Figure 1 (cartoon, rainbow, N blue to C red):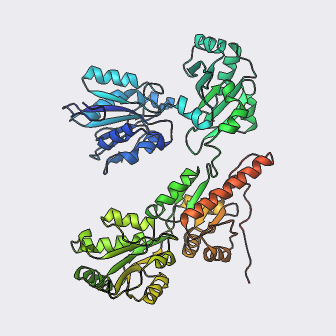
Figure 2 (tube, rainbow, N blue to C red):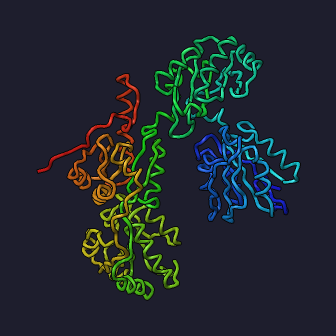
Length: 567
């Protein structure tokens, strides 16, 4: 059997023990993604489900976790959540010690079960007990290794565990380490990687000092490693308790959060200043409000994540059918009967509107045969490709109506048998494209394919975050996004960085009393994200040069909202 081929499931099913890594979804292996795509049932702690669920088969649903009324439930043992494609509650949530029974129950009836754990199954958990239970019950299983927290977190913290000279690397779990273990690692001069909790790391440092390590031995402590909540403190074995106290990290109700501590010269502050690639991203940890739908914001949100930001999409407009659908119906029929030489799509929503009308009439992408198709930009082109249509024209320069006109050929009666263009668009679209096409000699059927209306207000906690300074930045991609966001959620707080796609949008923001901090050099959402990243990097550099801590805008003391009087 190929190592990547999945076996046929016998009557009692099959289980894959899968390492989900330390927190960054991008650290899932290709093998893990493949296993998830074939799974019938997922079993995992809630935080692990957040990492893996996007790779599960379509239609998989979540059975909510419930509190388990048992003495063990009071000890803080993690609760398991089951995700079952059949959407049945037959497999109920259970405490961690019952995981083996839960997994085997889920595998009954020939189902493929993925038991996902944080980190690596062989290093970060006691999954071996569950594997032994499967073996004893005759349930076949396999193991998909994952990135272990003890190696992945230091890599994201900029702390290599080995270098050209090599090193003796020891791994210690402070929760279960014996006196003999502390004595052995204390007598060593190698690198020690300690898995602990935030409130126990100082005690672990004291154990190492008692065992023979010098108090001035460098130490790093990283919490929420590999995620955008990651935070690392550099200290020594003798000063770590004071460092955490001065940083106001401890005492804290969150003291039980897991951390990875690296002890040894390779964790020295001077080295980490040069190697801390993750936490030094320009927008690291910034919560950025993107006033667009998830579909519209997909590539923009991915770009923001590459800068270390945490994008939060809030739709400010909703799309509805036109009030009078007859015009759209006539245009689609004309498309089929050969009335048009071109069809031009200026948005993903226009593609969606035409596609829905096609499905209503039982048509598919074959109806575009013989018709030239234009798309205003990359996202619109991708929506067409997903429909099965490859655009003939996408702007080579600016992705806008003006950019599309620059590349659009003039009408030529010799080469163009038909002189008409079908332009499905929003009810509030500008006339730029229509006027430009007419100037090039084309006749245009300018058809309202959909209406844009103000979206419903976001949840209360999002509204409070917008008004109360919970967001670090907001990206405004049009004047309507400014007006609609303020209308449905209120004005962003004065600490929030305001970034606008162009002068017209900036003017609208200022008219609403907002000070514009960032403006894109050209009207492109991706250039806007780049401009925000540049702003964030300059802000970070200025803080470091001044000897100040690097903070996010939302960490500034709340003040009054920006107000600007206009004349």
